[in-house]
Length: 475
Length: 102
Image (tube, rainbow over all chains, first blue to last red; front, side, top):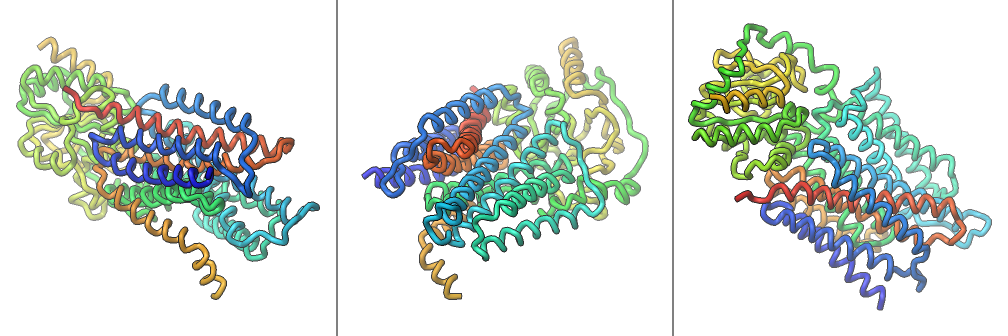
């Protein structure tokens, strides 16, 4: 009876995950979709606690379980409620790491469990099946890599960890990766369930691999990495599903694993790069400078004063703002909204052009601007924006660089050649707000800054926008 | 060879679930507009927190007195809860801001 109800709980859980993901794909239903999935998760978790049975025996240790649930809930809610909007990608990475660690710890306990069951002094059975060992090792390796990698990604996004690579790192990584798999494979084939030394060796090797895997990848590529690690954790959860023959863990894990992998590929496509290219890290790291910088036109650029920029925008018919990473760093989204309202009051048509990979995660700019109460209808996607630039008087670029670099269209030698960009140079005037002439993440010069219709407005995005707002008010 | 075929035969249900879930996952994500990518990633992140069920099962089976195992299990449940609860709450916070204005 209890087990039948539990099976239904799991069915409901699996269904809500699918429906939830589907509803998350439409702006109107997204929030409900998240709720639906959360309710399904709640049913699956409490069904497990109260209804799970193995050989007729239910679960024990309720004190420990509820203690852990309550502690985790308090920390989780506080962290999620308090985090600043700009820091959300980091937090997602951190939570992802927690899931990976959870999967790895399950494997640690299960290994100890079968070691005692099959080969200890009180051994009751001859040997575990190879399938059981395989899922335990896979859960351990994938979970550990995901945990270590996510922690490094988290550190990189909040600036605590810098890019790091050493000579021969790629080779070392590959050797480490295959050695780990080989040892795990050996233990599975030999059905060796008591070799703690090798087991913990695998754990340590997987953690080191996770660290070394993410460390050399540039900050701009962190969204792709987080998405990839997200799908890793999904697969690790599915391993648990195999281990316990648990359908909800299996569907949930595989769904996320498949969806996360596709999302990763989509993100790479938006940057016109292959996944291998991102992972080997030739772009964000060492090889970026070289030929492309030399080829870039170093020339004269002109600066624009705050008052000129204010006049220029106030008397325009149509202004498109292109937000980028610089806006997020400066926390300038609220001032930006203020500027937008001021201009609208003066009868200027203001819109935001959102490049799919602007900021640190796809959709990052949308989240950021939504926080500042910018209306959803004002945000236009890349294709639509590119049609509108022709009829635009002023484009204001706030801390974006590579996503507006015309080299992606014109220079086949450029590392970003082929990446879809916002074609801002079609507008009558372009005002670029940047802190300095330094190149963006891709490490290449931007031809746009030297074009006659472009003028530079140097300074921190927030400070510059505040001055601009004050100036427009006094006009 | 026979062992593999036998394994496939025994686990055919699971293989069906895995294969169909892969296609489903790809289909569902394929239609998401890029503006929703961040919340979607965050929502998917919360869903793989379903791994907590494994942690709960492990924890519930530990015989009282095995403190080391209990502590590791406790840690696993705490981390899993963080993933689930934190994931859903963060996603909700993101989506809250997508409400249509006016």
